[in-house]
Structure formats: C-alpha cells, structure tokens
Length: 165
Image (cartoon, rainbow, N blue to C red; front, side, top):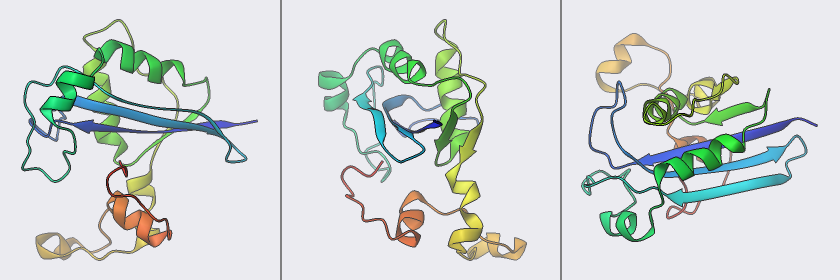
C-alpha cells in the first residue's frame, strides 16, 4: 500500500524568500496511506529563532512560544525525516520554499533531505483554482498560484484559521 506525507514549515518571517533564509519556527506533517488513513502526524515548535516578524500575517508563532515550547531543531528535523519512507511522495504547498529552506537548515546537521518525488500543491492546483492574475502580473496572462486558503476554498474544505498551516 502506498504512503504519502504532506508537510509544512512556518518561519519567523525575517530574511529572504528566494533563496529562503528565514528561520524555521514550526514543522508539521501528516503521513497517510492510499485509503486516506492517517498513519502518523506531528507538529512542533522549533527553537532557534531570536526574533519574529510580528507584522507578517503569515507568522503565527510568537517568540515567547519559541522560547517556552520550542524543541531542538535537529530533533524536529529527524522526526520528520524518519517518517519518510523510500519511494514515498512528499507534498507541500509552495514546495520550492519549504524544501529549500529545510535543505538549508539540514546543512548544519549530518542529515540530508531525501531524493523522493516532491509535489507542490501550489503549482499543481493553479489550473484547478483558475484565479486570474492582477496588477503587474496580469500582463503575463495565465493564472496565479493559489494560496493554501484559496485552494481549500476551491475544494470546499473548511479550515480553522488558528490551526490551518
């Protein structure tokens, strides 16, 4: 039976987006089989960030929670990597960012990101969501990459805004 893993990272919102240089503040994943049964799931706050961009709407984690609840990044990364089986497909929304940020973080350890296939739900759902580009990007035609919230809305998935990412 095939297994799959969906993961997401949260960051402190300080640093560059391309290439990603932000500090990981949370890692979460759900591992499931082809029948949709959850096999494993994990979410933890990661220590290490010394500041957070509280003005960034995407940053939902406070410096206080990082200091009080954060675990050693190496333990968090190992827990995620240990959940990945050979030939398992890895999914992430904005996978280029998440995977490259994690690869950068892993350079400080003896761990490496596996060579499994990675599918980006942001890029693969563009034609499904069909959200027109606006502003300057509109001159290039096509559709914009949907946010995770926009994709959930298109799929009629109810979301809890406090725990969505």
